[in-house]
Image (cartoon, rainbow, N blue to C red):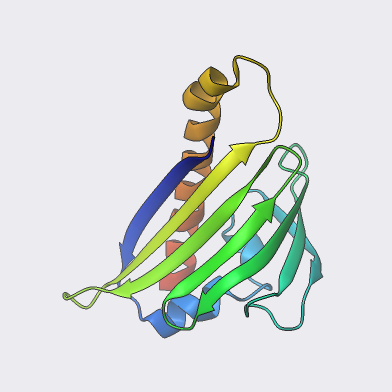
Length: 150
């Protein structure tokens, strides 16, 4: 059974600036929660079919593998994501707001790979919250980096 976590934030920025930061592998360590380093990245990143493998910081997710399933410049990207504990779909979306701000939505629809009969409870009380917190930290740090670029 897939679960979903999602966060949104508004920033005073352009879609162009947000995309430049979001898709720049040289900058990921400064704002992605738990990101260690890129292990492998396709040349066609961030286009459909591109793959990324990255390693988390010690004690984190380990090796994370992502494959781009959808990409629309100016709108966002959807990735198939997998690590040793979960698999799912991660999505980022960019939208201009009427007040001139930029809204960034970031979500993960996931399934746990293992666990016993208590998995739904553990997921509900611990994992879902931890994932939401991680997405939130990522988006907050992204906003700080984005504002520093302006």
